[in-house]
Amino acid sequence: MDKYQGLTGRLEADLAPAMFAYGVVDELRAAARKTPAVVDRVTGAHRATYPTVTRVTSWVILVLTFAISTFVASRVQSTRGLLIGGTISALIVPIAVAIVMEFTQVRVEWTASGIAARTPWNGPRRLRWEDLVSVRYSKLAGWFVIRDSRGGVVRVSQLLSGVGELLETMEQRVNPSVRGQIDVAVARYERAVRRGTG
Image (cartoon, rainbow, N blue to C red):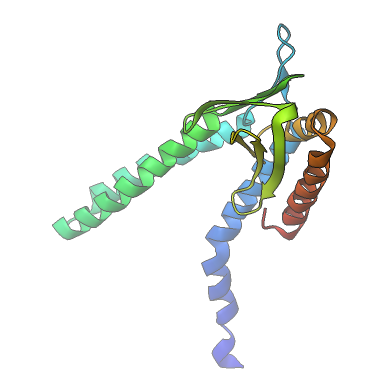
């Protein structure tokens, strides 16, 4: 029994970063569920963006990434260590920049006629409600994937505000064959959240 005594402490220490990251994502998900979509008073369009806490978190990640990279670079004495640290920074900093771009520039809007999305990755996309043929939830990516008959795709992150409102609007506007898919997608999302994997 004594040989396994320290195992629990090591296991907890090894899992601590993952548990922290999951806790942060869980809080961001909760913030998204509590934050309604913004309604444009002129056009009546509903707009989903990432809540303020999510945008702030992305900037904190970026600042911490730069701070840690700078700190490590200032402490490294060897050329080999500087090369390794520089390589790691060259990989991590662009990821942090991409997170900021995602959380500050993604917009999803919907009106009586359809849904539109703008991202820094794909540019603008527009889908009409009557053209939708598929709605599913991707547990791995944490987003709803909406497809139309012309090959258009809009991905809606679970961390965006107003996702519930969007799904309710979709249920009212889409063809009956797609309504069942929305129910399945929402059930899959809820199951993933309960299990802690979504």
